[in-house]
Image (tube, rainbow, N blue to C red):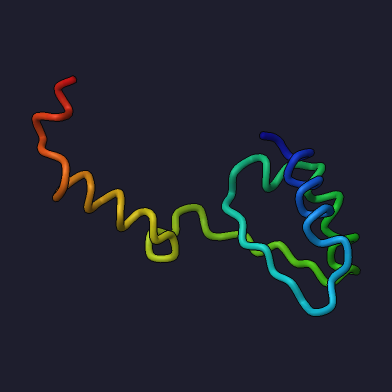
Length: 82
């Protein structure tokens, strides 16, 4: 997976946009590379906006709640030995 794949997916999934569309991304390098930055103006003209989450958004990332539950409540500490 790299920025070229992300760009190809966005362009394929949204060939035409009829209303404002927001794509939420994290700060992974594939979401903030020069290639992505280069496409931002084109996407903006097509009514597509990339919204970048803060560096660490535990409250916005529901999987973090699940991981915390699994780590501290579900899996017994002895499981970490192997």
